[in-house]
Image (cartoon, rainbow, N blue to C red; front, side, top):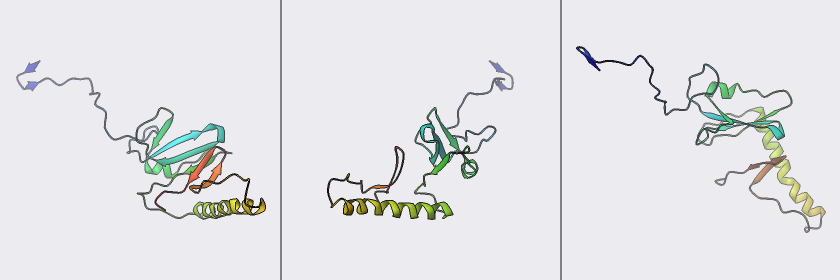
Length: 141
């Protein structure tokens, strides 16, 4: 319909969806920068870079909410580092590095103890393991 002043505007808001994914936290409208996934079998919350597409059982978080993320008591938070983001060292980084060095030394000890044969060969890309989850070394290192 047209009026003398031009086209009439609809009183119903538009259903146009922003192409920017937003934080999943209630009342937070900031752009999402990370994706949170829960691994219930391992009592682990995995926080990584923003997923390529939204998944129904994952949660997109803004920078503030991803930094303040805590897990339920007894759960572990695994933070996957985004290669494009500047790295901020923490106490967890030092502990993870020490654990990775210990883990890397173990296959050599087993091979030496077993006479160099019969043991399971370790994946050279694997840095650490927790249950069925594996931490792999980046291919560019």
